[in-house]
Length: 80
Image (cartoon, rainbow, N blue to C red; front, top):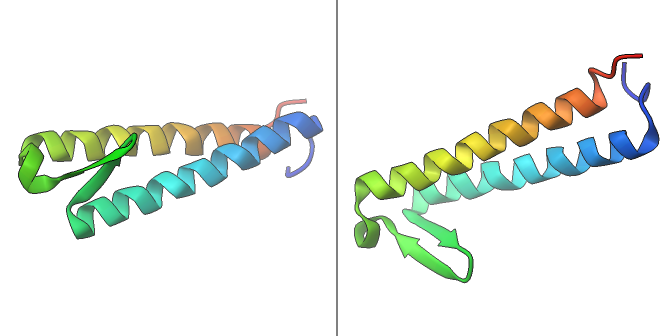
């Protein structure tokens, strides 16, 4: 149930959820625009090649799934 854990666990879960949403927007923009930000530079699909670009998108997708899993675990799946 929501709110059954310690307050700091719920806070970290909310932060993880927000970061997962940020990564989801980043992935969507990368697939639509063909540009993915890497630290301080932006790489295009043509510059990197299709396979490397999709590999970076997949890595971001795995990170998003892991952050989502952490958020769900910390917020809703607290064990007494």
